[in-house]
Image (cartoon, rainbow, N blue to C red; front, side):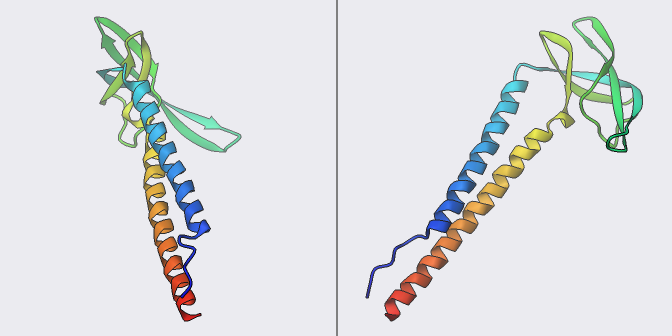
Amino acid sequence: MKSSSGFSFKAAIIIAASMSVVLAGVSISLAVSEALSGYKSATATITKEDKVYDPSLETTTKEYYVTYTVDGVEYHDVAIDGADPDYQVGKQIPIRYSPGDPSSVRTREHSYIYYLSIGSIISGVAAITFGTIYGIRLSRKNIRVLDEE
């Protein structure tokens, strides 16, 4: 009986690449959290909706504007960076603003990057699992072949 070479090189590459995807997802998630850590919460009212046509993409998107108050100062028709199918003029929504520049507003929907990071973490974990199973099966196959020799 000869000894097996163990885990396959392909499986190790899959696992290493998957781990880097997971780390990238965690890094993005931490960066988004850090970027928003200084922001404060407020409630805003949607005051305006504009439809914007992009001729290069041949698509129409909606842009929303809100009014809100911070420390007694009212901010009018400030553009927000997110859109939700439930948005309509007159609706109150939660926002986050920068204390240093209260006209800098974020909505909960802004964080598509956050969702991308969660997706990369999940897909990375799935790929690590696949790579591990692939490596174990290949190792067992190699052991069986070596046992037969």
